[in-house]
Length: 141
Image (cartoon, rainbow, N blue to C red; front, side, top):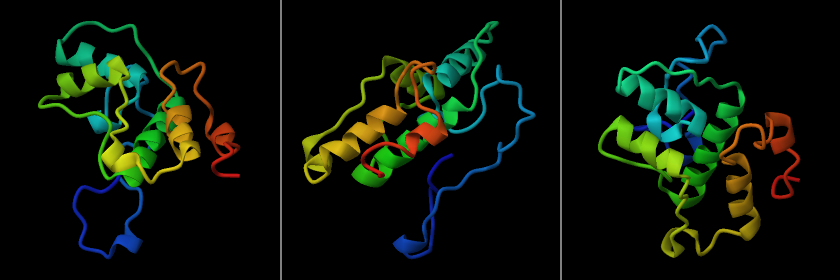
């Protein structure tokens, strides 16, 4: 799940995209997708692949909840929370989990909205909400 990079449509027509890997057939020990939207557990797989090292890491559908948190962050702030000049650098920044909330971009965003982003981007997958639990967040209710 990610936002489109380039679009020629009016802003009201922009939607979530990139379902190129939308399948349940990809092994959950393989890194696919855009690094900036990768959950920590996917970033760990990505770092191992970049270093050509064996990885005993895996992930499940909760990585999509993280990606949705990145999309929410981008919609609310106009920027992505993690960046880097190489995929490995992006993955490293994701694993550090230092989510910036610069005042210039977030001053008009409610605390409830920020909490929603952090809720979706919980670093530990076992503590991260499911998609259904995400819909129960007070910011959405």
